[in-house]
Amino acid sequence: MADTARKYGKGELLTAVVIALAAGFFAGTVVMELRQPAAVQVQAGAAATGSAAQDDGHDHAAEFSRISELEIATATRPGDSGLWVELGNLYFDTHQARKAITAYEKAIALGVASPDVWTDLGIMQREAAQPKQALTSFEAALKLNPRHENALYNTGVVLLHDTGDKAGAAEAWGRLLEVNPNAKTPDGRPLEGIVAELKRG
Image (cartoon, rainbow, N blue to C red; front, side, top):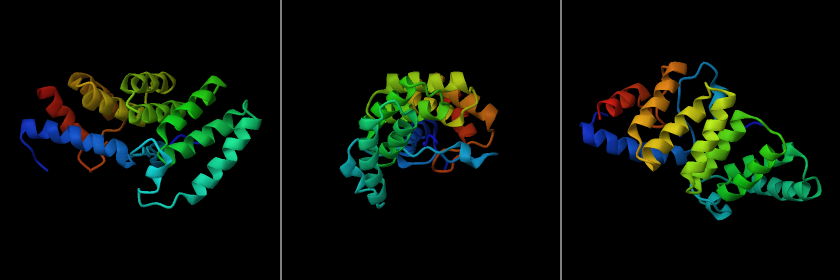
């Protein structure tokens, strides 16, 4: 989150990749062997409503309490970008994608230029069925930090799963592998092998 997703035959592999990457995107964490573990903090939710957060197996009472406080705070201090980022993060954690999008966009409009915020915005846009906007947000993150692992990973997810662009996904994940050769999918499979399969078609 911004501060502050076996062996197969060729056809089976690509189908499994689509399913696994879609599930991984929503499940919560991009699993990678990182030199700096804190760099990857994807925590996407499964729905765009607060009620969904009550069904994910976690107690979000504290988050919802803080959300209420921040909604009041942002109403009285709408120019405080830090409040909007924190509110966006909490909407993110409680699976309220559309509200998170609004909060992150307000923070960005107030001058926040963080690749983490842009990436989290993209994740929420993808969750809200806005893949084109998500790609634009990931691109903005990568302009600020071309080595941003979450932005590269999630770019590949959207290209493969939402637009069917296998070549584009392979290119994005190839760039990720240049940054982190040990990158893995959320279910622990090396990304390098998946990229090789995508390139073979």
